Amino acid sequence: MTNHPASAVPIAQIRLALDDAPGEGQPHPAHDISAAARIGDTLFLGADECADLEVLDLVGEDFAAHRRIRLGEAFDLPGGPDEEMDIEGLAVDAGWLWVTGSHSLTRKKPKKSKPLDDHGLARLAHLKQRPNRMFLGRLPLIETSQGRWDVALAPLPDGRRPQMLPIGKHGSDLYKALKKHPLLGPFCALPAKENGLDVEGLVVDGDRVGLGLRGPVINGWALIVEAHIAPASETPDEADLALAGDLKLHVLDLAGLGVRDLKRRAADVLILAGPTMKLSGPARVYRWPGWTTPVPADLLHRPEAVIELPHGQGADHPEALAPVRHGGNEALLVVCDTPSPERLAGGAVVADVFGVEG
Image (cartoon, rainbow, N blue to C red; front, side, top):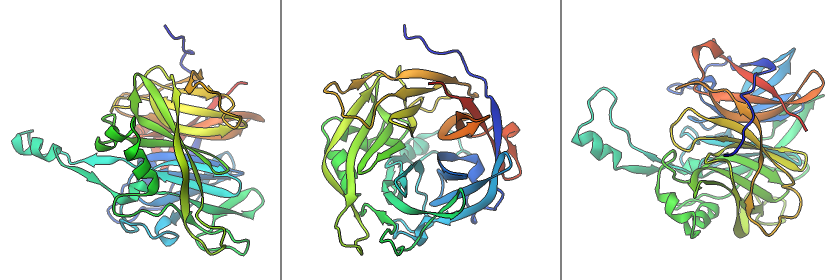
C-alpha cells in the first residue's frame, strides 16, 4: 500500500478580493477559479465559465486591486469573446503568460426542474465541442511597477505580441494530434469528468509545453502530454504559434488520481492531483523532480506525495496552485473550486497557504 502524508493544516489563509461584478449572465469568478499563476506581487487567475483573466496585486497580506482582462480583445476566439473557454491552466515562463483551455467535450444535461425520463436520457446522448476550449496561447508580460505585472493585448516594441495556436473547424493542430494519438484518441470522444480528454494543468520551459490531464487516467496512471510549441515564423509580425514534432507522453503513478494543476518549482514540477470523476477527494500535491533535465528512457514516473490536502464534500475542491512566500519561506497557495459559504465574503474568496519542504 502506498503511504501518503497526513492531512495538512494550512499555515495561513489569503483573501482574494475579486470585487468587480462579472459580465451579464456570467457567474462570479470567485465561485469557479480553476487556474492560477503568480509573478512578483501579481496573481493571475482563470475561471471555468468565461474567457477572461482575473488579475490581483498583493496589498498587505491579501491579493486585491482587482482588474479583468478580456482575452477576446487580444485573440480572435473562434466561439466569440463571450463563449466560455474553460481556462484550466496558467503558466509564467520567460516573459510570457501561457493560457490553456480544457480541450474537453461537454454533455447536455437533463433539466433540473424535471424528473429523469426518456427525454432527459436523450439529452445526455448529445455531446458538444466548444471551440474556445481548444485554446492554447500566450501573452507578453510587462512590469508596470516594481513587483507588479500586467499582460499586453497588442504588439510591443520588443516584437512580442499575443500568440495562439490557430483553431479551425476541427480544432487546433494540437487537438488534431491528440485525436490521432493511438492511446489518447479514443478518449477525445468522451466528455470531461467521464475519463474523457480534459486538460487541467500547464507547465512551460521554453518551447516545451506540458499539459496535465485530469482524464484520461489509464491503467490507474495519470498523463502529462508534452508538446513543442513555438512561433510559426521568425517574422516579427507573425502572430500564430505552431505545433512542432510529435507529442510525448509522461506517465505518472498518482495512486489513481488525475492531474488538476501543474507548477514549476526550479527544475521540478509540483502536481496537484485529484479525482477524474465528479468526486470530492482525495486531493494531494506531488513533487516530480527534474522536469527541465533530460528525460530518462523510462516514461513511468513515481512522484513523491508531499502534501495531503483537506477537502470538503460537495465543496472546497482544491483546483489551482500558485507559489507564494510566507514568513520568508517558500509556500504554496491552494485555491478551491466550488468554495463553501465560509470561504466567500462579497466578491472575495479565501485561499489556503501550505508549507512546502525541500
